[in-house]
Image 1 (cartoon, rainbow, N blue to C red):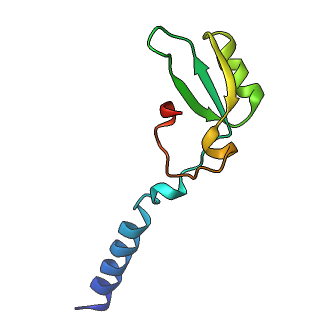
Image 2 (cartoon, rainbow, N blue to C red):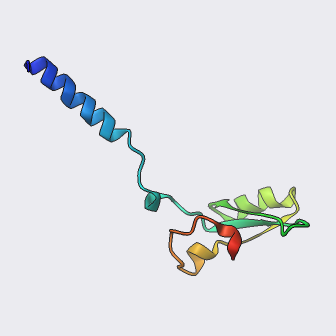
Image 3 (spheres, helix red, strand yellow):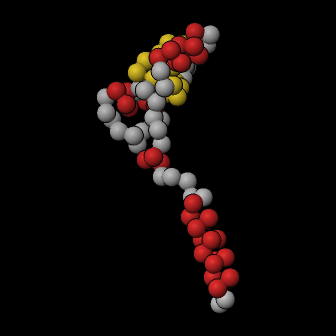
Length: 85
C-alpha cells in the first residue's frame, strides 16, 4: 500500500469514527417539564432549561411547569419516557 493510500484510509477511518453519535447516556436532560391538560391525561415536554422558558410555552398551550423528576429526584438519566411518573 502506498503512503498516499494509507493516509487516505486513515483519514477515512478517523472521519467515520468522528461521525458516530454519542451514547444515549450523554443526552442532556432538562430540569423543567411542561405538563399539558387533556382528556387522555395530556402530555409532558421535559425540554426546558429554565422555569421562564417553560412558562413561555406553557401559558399559551394550557399547561403548567414542574421540575423534571428524573433530574430533581436523581432517578437517573436512563429514563426516556417521562409520562410514566
